[in-house]
Image (cartoon, rainbow, N blue to C red; front, top):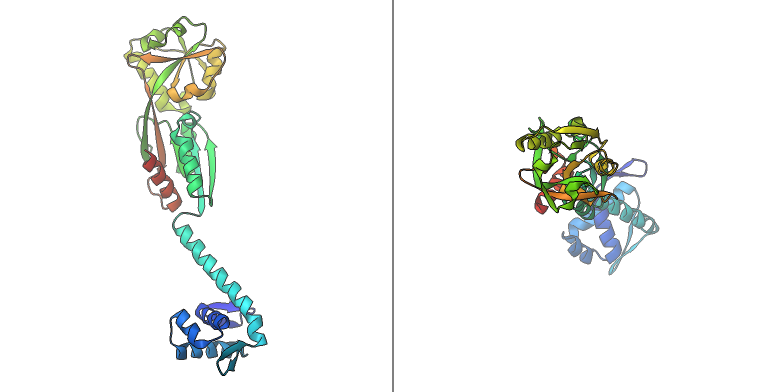
Length: 304
C-alpha cells in the first residue's frame, strides 16, 4: 500500500498501473490485454480507484474513454509514484547483490607493490561503481586490529606465524626477496649474491611490531644461513628502506615487488641459497555477512 495526498488516501500500486494503462490506451479492452487481466476486473479496479479519490478519472465514450481534468492532473503524479516505486525496487535488488554499500580495504605499504592488489581494487571499482570504496595504508598489526574492531572490512597484509583469531586468511602466494645494497657496495658488482654474504652487514629493517611475521622470516633466514643478524637503523616503513640504504646506513632485504622503488645510489640484487620469501594474504573476518565483502573476496579469488 502507498499513501498519497498527505496520507489520507490508501492506494495500491496496481491501481496506478491499471490507471496508467487505461490513460495511455484510452480503451479498456486494450488496457486489459496490456496488464494481463480481464476487462470487467479492470473496470472494477478503476471504479474502486475513483471511489477512493472521490472523483471521476475517465469520461466514458461510445468507443473508449477520455481523461477528465482530474484524470489529466492525476496522470503525471501516478507515473512519478510508480517510477519511484520501480526505482526503489531496483535499488533494493542491487543492494541485495552487493552493488550498493561500502567497502573499507587496508593494505601494508609493501602490499601495494604486488600487482594483484591494485588490480583487484581497479576491477572492483569497475564492476561495482556505486559501492563506496575507501583505502587505508597501515602496518600489518594495525590493520588486523582495525579488522577486529570492525573499522575495516578486508586487508592485504604480510602474514605472521599463525592466523589471527576470528579471521579468515586467503593466501595470495609468495614472492622472492632481494638484497638492497648501496651502489658502491662490493656485493653490488654481482647480479646475484648468496644470502650468507650478508653476514656481518648491518640490516636496515622496519620495526618488528609493524610486521612480526615478515621480520621473523628474515631473522630465521639469517640463522639458517649460519650467521646472527646485525640490526642497523630502523626504517619507519618498508618503502623507506631504500632511502636509508642509499644514505649508507646498511643493507636490507625486501620483497621483489618493492624493487620498483627506484632510489639513486641503490642496487637491488637477487639472493641465492635459502633466502626468506615474502607471503601476501587477504584477511577478512571469519563471520562476515556483507555481500559487498563477499563480492570482493570472490573477485580476488577469481584473479588468483
